[in-house]
Image 1 (tube, rainbow, N blue to C red):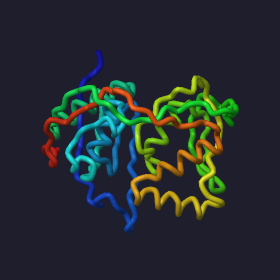
Image 2: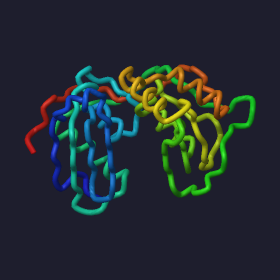
Image 3: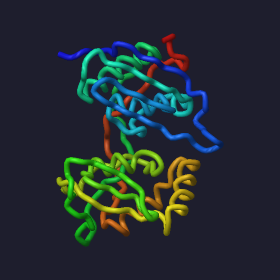
Amino acid sequence: MGATAFEAASIRVNADGGEKNNRPAEEKIVMEPGGLRMTNVTLVRCLREAYGVYAFQIGAPEWMSSVRYDIAARAADAAPEDQLRLMLQQLLADRFHLTLHREQRNLNLYSLERGKQEPRLRDAQHPDSKVMGLAGGAVLFRGYSMADFIAALSGPPFRVDRPVRDMTGLTGKYDFELKIAPDEAGMKSVFEGMLKAGGDAPSVINLVQDQIGLRFKAEKASRDSLVVDSAEKTPTAN
């Protein structure tokens, strides 16, 4: 059995307050065998990474979605991603005195389904390499599974406004594009607007439906949720 705690970890309140040059600062998360680095993250985002849930599945005080932190943690030995997530759970419990419990909650969600026409997806040229890039006003997805795509839609700048579950039956890796604006300058403006507004789910949903041929069906279902019982804003000293 692997280690349950990091060998060393530094946690600091992010000095930018979530902004950089009067613009929303990006959240950055890097998980690698030797440890993890998380920049400008909220505790809700940390819980998402640690437990593999959506923000909508987390019941937490409001400050846990606004106060931001920089976290760097080093593992004693190389560890796989699932083990790093367990170690992050322990780190949050130790340093923020975080306690929580699980319960079933009825949530509004989307089921991602096939439309009437065949989805406009191409078999991935490099299925073992997942890459998301920008070009000509479009977001380029390369080597993406439906699970990867759903995860991208749930994060910034898209932030689809409820959980999405995959009901497409598509099991491969695909190459496809999502046109956001006529050019890169227009795309930058749209993304900045999404970040400031906390996401722009309706337009993203429409883009996916119109351009890729997948549809979002609004539903309600019972989902496993995390409920925070207690946590402290200031982590214990490094």
